[in-house]
Length: 201
Image (cartoon, rainbow, N blue to C red; front, side, top):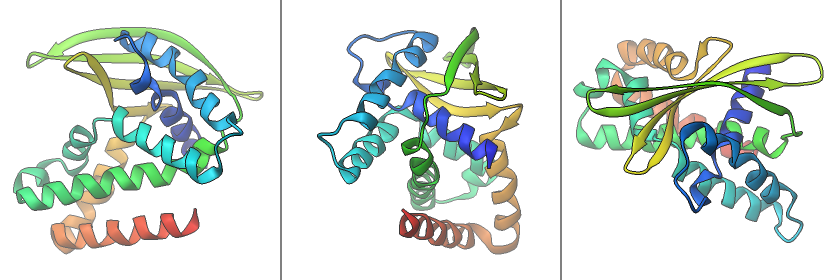
């Protein structure tokens, strides 16, 4: 539950940078996001559904769900049809959104410190690794964000919390399901999970 809470804060940190007017670097992008999200959460002119819709739209604009989907499905991505890839990406994005939206809404203003940034190129693509830590009343939790530059914008494609890799966790789980039930079996399970998460909210 602690890691789920931390992943939710990770989403919180990034989901508002889409509305920034400039094109900041990866660390600066992280720094400018929290106030905007907190502003949405504290905006008394918006009801709960309006706040949730705004936050979900921001999530969609800030994460590179296709890259995350390819990494989560791994070798099975190439074996999937174009339609299966599209459906998997849709479901995976919904799964992440609805898994963490409730925790984002319960954000209690933990302090975030920024501890380093590394830039590199991989096959002509610009990649950034931004190290941070979340400081609570009782502990400090290291968080590493992995971002890829798309045109003039940095998009998140993975998060590591205390060296636990978000995408790798899903990949390990999905690999087991696909081996037993195939891609269609995985898609069915994901559809069921998304419905379950939505029904709880």
